Amino acid sequence: MLESCQNAQERWGGVHKLIDSWLKARHELVRAFDVLGAKPEALAANLKPLQEFCEVLVDYVSAGHFGVYEQLTKEAEAFDDQRGLELAETIYPRIDVITGQLLAFNDLCDAGNCVAEKFKELGALLHERFELEDCLIEVLHNAHKEEPAIQA
Image 1 (cartoon, rainbow, N blue to C red):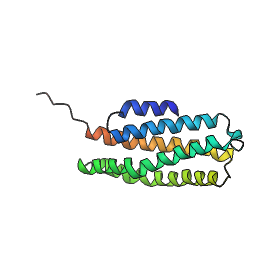
Image 2 (image 1 turned 180 degrees about the vertical axis):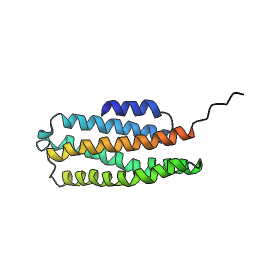
Image 3 (image 1 turned 135 degrees about the vertical axis):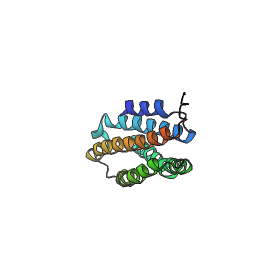
């Protein structure tokens, strides 16, 4: 998962400061997940790393919903990018479902009910979300690149 995170940053880094910052937050989230994932059975014994992970998770999810997705949609509208807007209409509902599951995990942990099985499920959800986000960024980014000059 960390490798795909780095690849996304290499492909779209610099496109927009907001996206750059968000991709850095994703990288931090993946690292925190990997640290906890090495010993998921120890989650109940040491809650501090789990709480820190949940903070990073909520920050990442919030940045997507209240910043990046809105910006990507505005860009698509500004460039009259119908393909990007249609893709957003397709992808955002699934991201919303995943967001609900991620926040439910956070709520479980806040209530002291975090278990290793739920943490393992989280990895698949994060992976799916990252792929959906990457798809959205790629379509919008490529649509807004300058077209090469056509030679006569």
